[in-house]
Amino acid sequence: MVRARPWTAVPDQGGRRVVVTGATSGIGLLTSKVLAHRGAHVVLAVRDPAKGERVARELSSMRGRVEVSRLDVSDLDSVHAFAERTGEVDVLVNNAGVLGLPRSASAQGHELQLATNHLGHFALANLLLPRLRDRVVVVSSASHRHGDLDLEDLDWERRGYRPYAAYAASKLANMLFLAELQRRLGAAGSTLRATGAHPGNTRTAITSSTGNGLTTRVGAVGQGLVAMPAWRGALPVLYAATMDVPGNSYLGPDGPGELWGWPTQVGRSRAASDPDLARRTWTATERLTGVVWPFSRR
Ligand SMILES: NC(=O)C1=CN([C@@H]2O[C@H](COP(=O)(O)OP(=O)(O)OC[C@H]3O[C@@H](n4cnc5c(N)ncnc54)[C@H](O)[C@@H]3O)[C@@H](O)[C@H]2O)C=CC1
Ligand SMILES: O=C(O)c1cccc(O)c1O
Image (cartoon, rainbow, N blue to C red; front, top):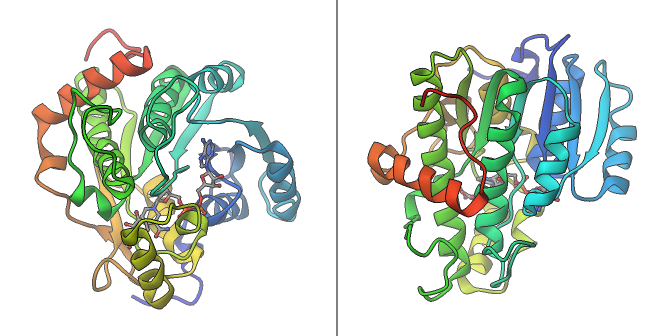
C-alpha cells in the first residue's frame, strides 16, 4: 500500500518514553523525529551531547518532549552510567551502529564493531529491563546473512580481521540476541517483548564512516544508486517500536531486495534461527560484558 505520509500510520505515542541510541543522524534521527512528532518523550542517547542538543533543538517543534543523554554505547562504563541515571522507559531502540571500521578497540579492549553494535546494546538492554515497560527494538541488517560468529574469538584476535565480516558477524549477534531475549522473556513470564528491524539499504552516514576496503567502496557506489532516504529506512524501526507485532518479529521493507517497501516480516538466515547458537552467544556475551540476565527465571 502506498501512502503519502507513511509515518502517520505510527500510533499515538503520548505518555510513552523511548530511548533511541545513535539518534543524531540517519535512521536514529528520523526514528526520534517521528516518535516525537507522534507525542513520545524521546531520550536521545548520543555520544556527542553538543550534537544531541542541536538535534533536540531541531525537534523542539514536535509534540513530544526531547531530552539528551550522553551514551558511548561501545564503552561499558558509559552504558552503566547511562542505565543508572535513566528512569522508567517504555521502549529501548538499539539503533547506533558502525560499519566496516579498520581494526580498532573499545575502551574495554573489544573489537569496536562488536562492542558498538552488539556488546554495548546487550548490556544496555539487560540493565534497563527491570525498568522497561514495553519492548526492546534490535536494529539489525540483512548483512547478518553473511555473518559468521566464532564464539571462541568474538574479538577477532585469532581470525584474520576483515572489516565487513566483522560487521556482518555483529549483525548476526544482533539477530541471535533478539531471538534469545524473546525466549527468555517468555520463559520468565514477562509481558515485555523484543522486536527486530532491517531498515533496508538507506542513504546515511554509515557508509562514509567505513574504512577503504573494496567491499565498502563497492557498497558505497551501490548505495548511491539504490539507497532510500533515511525516513524510509526508519519505517521498519518505527513499526518494530510501536506496532502490535509478536515478539521476535523481524520487520523490513517488502520491496524487491528488501528496498522501498512497506514494513513487513522478512526472512532471516539459518544461523540467525538457531536456538542453540543463540543460547551460546548469550552466555559468551555475558562473559565479555559482565552483565547478566536480571530476572530469576530464564
Ligand atoms: N543505512 C543502511 O543502509 C542500513 C543501516 N542499518 C543499521 O541501522 C543502524 C543505524 O545506522 P545508520 O542510520 O545507517 O547510520 P548513521 O551512521 O547515520 O547512524 C549511526 C549512529 O550511531 C551513532 N554511534 C556510532 N557509534 C556510537 C557509539 N559508540 N555510541 C553512541 N552512538 C554511536 C552515530 O553517532 C550515529 O548517530 C545501524 O545499526 C546499522 O547497522 C542496517 C541495515 C542497513
Ligand atoms: O542492506 C544493505 O544494503 C545495507 C547497507 C548498509 C548497511 C547495511 O547493514 C546493509 O544491510
